[in-house]
Image (cartoon, rainbow, N blue to C red; front, side, top):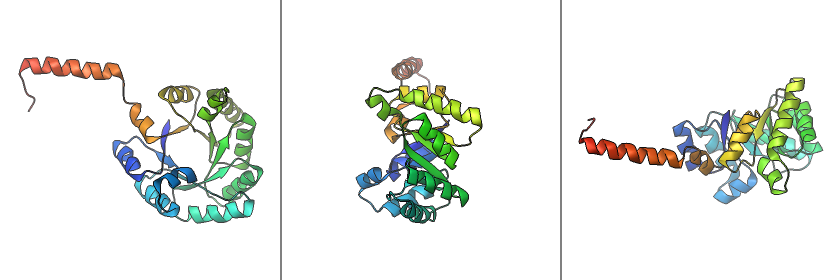
Length: 217
């Protein structure tokens, strides 16, 4: 499974990249707004840190605007993926970008039928939102599972990018049902390495080692 960092914090991205824990990055206007920086500049910087896909979202809602903005974003770097909303206009733009060789990430997916439409339009990635479905008492992981089954049934190449992943349990569950990618906040990626029994074990080993009075160096 690939891990994408869902952030516009270039410092956090660089730290995760150095650890080898990030395969790509997803951003959106809200995340960039939090940084207080120029949108295009942030995308350019992120694309220079990671070699993998960097999703950059259009702001336009109409087809012509999506195409114009998407082309501008794709020009920033070869690893930029144009992020589009799952609307009819967004699907039309997805098909256009697929025809000219520009990768896309279709976002705000909340049903298996929407995921099917995105695959038919030629999306590179589909982003079903796990946590937001859980918020309204629906099963976000089930959506990932349904999408996996549909894509496998018909041989679609669109990759399932589990989004709105908020907890370590979310990650385990989407991995078990076959998501290709999970995008998560940087803090959550780091949290995956933590376990109280690991910490307790380290403390025990240190205590025992100290008692030997030895040194490796």
